[in-house]
Length: 220
Image (tube, rainbow, N blue to C red):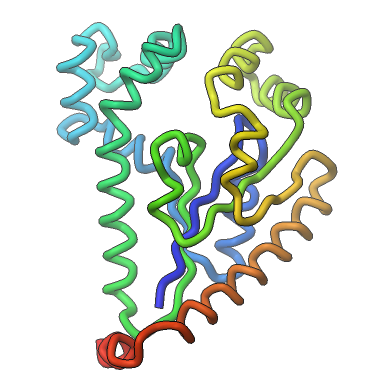
């Protein structure tokens, strides 16, 4: 039995830290940024789509996608961000689905929690693709300070946050919220608490499964 979990939050909210905690507790974690990086490699579907849409000026001299140039285009206006997302999101969703299916087939009789970490998970219609949605939350001022500490300019951080789903709207989609606006220890405790709840959800999903389907899954 598989419980699929969409893990999201705003810029520098601490999603990756929570994803690592979930993985340490036994989840299979998918990082949407890594999926995108794979799709951007020469020869992959994302690379071909981007070059068709934006031309070769988005490439580095070695032929790879220049993600800084691409981001400058994509975050310039809401319309440009939508243009990029419309190109890439369907490819990312398809690859994530393939990874989930492959993991389920790899251990057909094993109960698993599969977590997909993605910043724009809700913006791309993710609410309907997952059993549960977990939102990692931090106040905007904390997000900005963390992003600046990582090397992003303050203006760029503010601009990117403004392009994302508003905080209160994101929270309305959540089945569980992890408050990560304080110290690291408090965030870790909250993540453990939510993972315990996800384990209970997995057990409940298995209990409610039709007997004939459960028997088929156990036989593999």
